[in-house]
Image 1 (cartoon, rainbow, N blue to C red):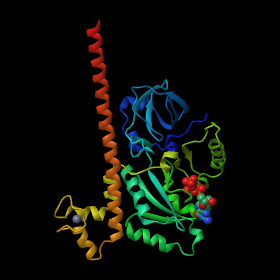
Image 2: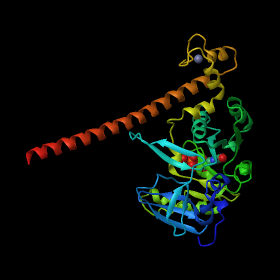
Image 3: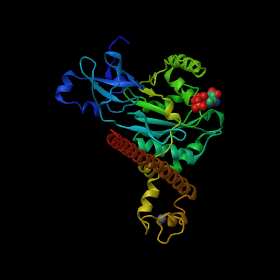
Image 4: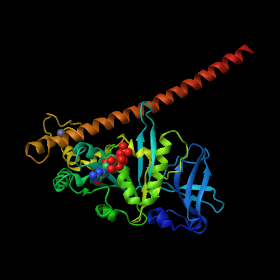
Length: 348
Ligand SMILES: Nc1nc2c(ncn2[C@@H]2O[C@H](COP(=O)(O)OP(=O)(O)OP(=O)(O)O)[C@@H](O)[C@H]2O)c(=O)[nH]1
Ligand SMILES: [Zn+2]
């Protein structure tokens, strides 16, 4: 890219601009992280793309981050994040990992025909709320059912205030419903289970260019290492798509506040329970049970809430355990080293 790229088209917003000091206004170059690897990152600024070698003193960064470079393209500092997606790494690895920064809106894709599941939707809502991004529920494959409105209504009933759109991901016209979230400078991410139509949605939103990148990525999966795919991709209607594999495997951990935002009505009731550690099963003075008895709250919704809280507590605990285990191990190494040092000292 040799032409000057306007900062706004990279997702630059007043939130970031306001963090600059007067000096930085004059001389600093804002740049956005496109790719983040072990030893280097690729960033994009108004001047174009640059590769920046990573150094120990730098903070951990992630795709979507905004940082400042000096005039010689040297890293100065990381700007405060507007939103942040993190995850518990896959498998037995329980360290938290940064996935994506500064996503404004997350499209939670759920297909109407075979994937529709309110509990799963609530899990994604908790994740997105935890990250601080705005969730939009995209009910895909609406063309495969006669009347999608009943699904839209069902989601809205369970989650009042959440935006819901039903779409056919293969049709550009149908995706016009998502235009309000794709203004210039907006960063969008897509989440959802396998097969619900995430790639289809991204391809249609990005237009022709993406189809090519998609083809290159297919080759990658067969063992070639020509990674040219972009994690940040300009959309035809404006805005940027942040599409990184981590978003697809994301799990809940340390998301207590995201869950409480998603189930605001339950969190509110729970605050009024007699016992602060009420499990809302059969405790006396439980306002949550009372709401269910009055027909104001769905048993399903409470179950969904409790399940996510348990899962979150489990994942968060193993994360904390891992940290303290690491610390203990570190101490053990140190002690063993100093012991062996003492022994050596005595020997000589
Ligand atoms: N009829 C119809 N088919 C769709 C729609 N969206 C996706 N599909 C089809 O559903 C299948 C799966 O879509 P993908 O876009 O690959 O799904 P994905 O979510 O990216 O799946 P993963 O890559 O496994 O995460 C494909 O055959 C698509 O053509 C839609 O809105 N309507
Ligand atoms: Zn209770």
